[in-house]
Each structure stands twice: as C-alpha cells, then as structure tokens.
Image (cartoon, rainbow, N blue to C red; front, top):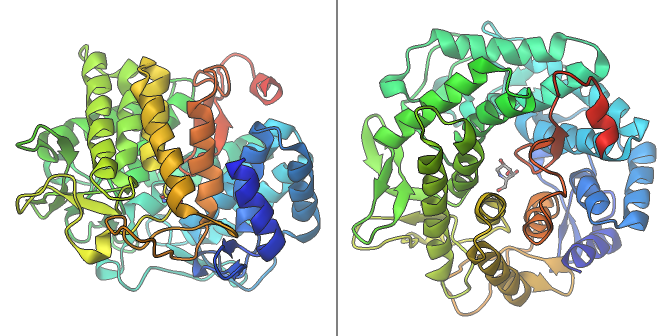
Amino acid sequence: QMMKHAWDNYKRYAWGLNELKPISKQGHSSNLFGNIQGATIVDALDTLYIMEMKEEFKEAKEWVEKHLDFNVNAEISVFEVNIRFVGGLLSAYYLSGEEVFRKKAVELGEKLLPAFNTPTGIPWALLNIKSGIGRNWPWASGGSSILAEFGTLHLEFVHLSHLSGNPVFAEKVMNIRKVLNQLDKPEGLYPNYLNPSSGQWGQHHVSIGGLGDSFYEYLLKAWLMSDKTDEEGKKMYYDAVQAIETHLIRKSSGGLTYIAEWKGGLLEHKMGHLTCFAGGMFALGADGAPNDKTGHHIELGAEIARTCHESYDRTSMKLGPEAFRFDGGVEAIATRQNEKYYILRPEVIETYMYMWRFTHDPKYRQWGWEAVEALEKHCRVDGGYSGLRDVYNNHESHDDVQQSFFLSETLKYLYLLFSEDDLLPFEHWVFNTEAHPLPVLHKDNGNKEEKQK
Ligand code: DMJ
C-alpha cells in the first residue's frame, strides 16, 4: 500500500520527471542527474517487480522503452547515475529478463567511461555525458575524487562486462583497486579524498558514513558477488574493518556502540544516519570473518542496530536525524539544527533487514514496524511521502521531496524485512548500494543465475 501511494502520486504529478514534490504536487529535479529524466521510474522498477505490481511494472517498462534517453547534454554525478540508473536497469534485467533493460544499462555504462580519463584512472565525480568532459566537486579537498563515489562502481561495472562481453568496464574498476593498493594508508584507514591527477590522498578525513560508506560495502559485496573468488576484495574489506574497529568504533558511557569520524587523527564523536548501514554490512560479512570472529561481527551489527534504533527512539517523531552525537552530555541525539532532518533514508531499516535475516530476533521486525508507523503518521501526505525538517519537533515541517531511494530502498527493505528469507536469498543475490539486487556470478553455472529469478 505504501509503494502504491508513493508510485501513484509520482505518476499523477511528476511522471517522467526525476522525483516528486508531494506537497506542491509537481516534479522535483535534482542536479545529480543533469537532464537525464525518470530517476524514480528506473529506481523503482525492481521494487515494483518484487512486490508483484505488474501493471505498474509494465507502464514503467514502456516509459523506459520510449523515453529513457541518454543522448542529452548533461553534467551528471557518475556515482548517482551508476547506483540508481545503471543499478536499477541491471536489476530490472536480471529479474524480468527483458532485453531493453540490458541494452540501456550497457548504453549508459559506455557513456560513463570517459569519466576514467584521468592520469591515474581514478574517475571524476562529475561528467558531461555529451562532451565526455569530467571534473570534481569544487568543494572536495584539493580537487579530489571521493572515496564513496569512485569506490561504488565495482558491482555494476563487473556486471556490465558480464552482460556486454566487453572487459573494459571491469578493467576500469580493477584499476581503482590497484591504485588504492599502492598507497600508504594512515593507520590502515582510507581517507575520503583522493586526487585523480597526482594519485595522492587529499585531507585525511575518514568516514564510514557520507563520503566513505559504500566503498567498504562494495569491497565485501564484490567478494560475495564473485562467489567468494575475489580474494583481493575480501582482504581489503576485513583489513579495513580491523582498522575501523581499532580507530573509529567506540562505546558511550551509556553503553551504546557507535562509529565516530576521524579528522587527521582526531575523533569527532558523531554518527550519520548514512553510517547506520554498517550494522547490516557487519552482519553480512560475519560468515567470512577471519580468526573465528563470526560471532563478533554479528554482535557488532546488533550493537549498531541498537544504537541506530535509539537515535530514532529518542526523537519526537520516532524517525532518526541525519546525524547524532555522543558528546556534550548527549547520546544518540542531534544537537545541531542542521542535522535534525530525515529525508526518507533507508539505512536503519536496511540494517534491521540484515539483522532479521541473520538472527530472526523478532525485535528487528518490531523496530521496522515502529518505523512504518512513524512514516505513515509523519511523512505520508496526500501527494505521496515527504521528508521532515526536524524530527524533534512535535509539528511536521515537510521538506516536500519524495526521494527516489524511498521507493528503491526504504520500501524494498521494509518489504523484505516482513518476507520469507527465500525472497532474494543472500546466497544468490547481493544488493547494490541503492538496494538493486544483482545476482552472484556463480563459478560453476555460467548464466544460470539469470534464469533463477
Ligand atoms: C542512496 O542513494 C544510497 O543508499 C547511497 O549509498 C547513500 N544515499 C542514499 C540513501 O540514503
């Protein structure tokens, strides 16, 4: 019902545009996609399919066939377009078997290739897909590319090579690994900034939230997606987790485990909503953890889930803030006005879903249901679902954006949390960072996974 409400209103007021403004009932355009259109449609395809919303999936597919156009003069975010559009199209293809999605994914992948034309092969953040000219965000330390952006292409690009027969995509992302492995890492940690021309780190800021997050996620998932043959990805992941535990993970005096941020050796005792995905990541990686640490990684996942649940529970609206702090006498609470917003993000529910699958502890479903009730009470409006400006206020102030990741991630993870484990089982599927399922490339059975659906 929630998906139907989000989708129907997008369709009614913003069809073919990127996102919906649910209060003003019109389209919302984000500069992340330049003038590529239809982000919500492409991001929602696989959710519609999984929820068996057949009519809606059919109309979405028809829109992709007729209107999804990459021959535009557009400066786009390589990361955002990759995770939402390439990821969305790949999943739609693997789930439905419809050729149009494969074709469009490969066509878009080819458009992204000029981003890698830098002295090191570390891609630019921004790319004009008509001219092929790239650049970095003007705010990024000394002209750097961002770890979570260039480190979150691997899964999709391996699949693009698999589906196109063209090795170039996989070569580009393997080269990123090579550059990273040649660099010294401060205390074994990966800074968020890397200059694509010099091949040197920018500022030594480290985060498992914004600017860093999905890089770590993709190391683990690259190994899982390779049917556990990608030993390099495996080693990079478990080495990174070791350094994260030593230098970033702390326990508050009230007993809450959190992941701090690192600024040139100093800890900022702040955890972002984005960082909450790490609970699920630790649980997903637990099985392969070296030195008998499986139980420890599950426990770490459970502790992060509990902390993130507290960040929700300590607000008036029972939805978590963008960032919460463990200093100045507070624990798991946002103290700065500009960190009190909630934009329909999925990470906490994502972690509940993984923890549910691995432990079947009913509290994760309870916590997920609390989030459903809060979303219905505070975010649902006549025209769809909206983010909130301040989750500590008793009165809603809506931000008037229905983010496309609400349909691709938040609602999909909720659906999976209340489904049986054999819907998209983890032995056969990994989720990209936008929750688009990609099949494990099994060593012994070629393309069997494509038929597995
Ligand atoms: C999504 O686009 C992805 O989950 C990404 O990894 C982080 N930001 C949003 C959701 O919060």
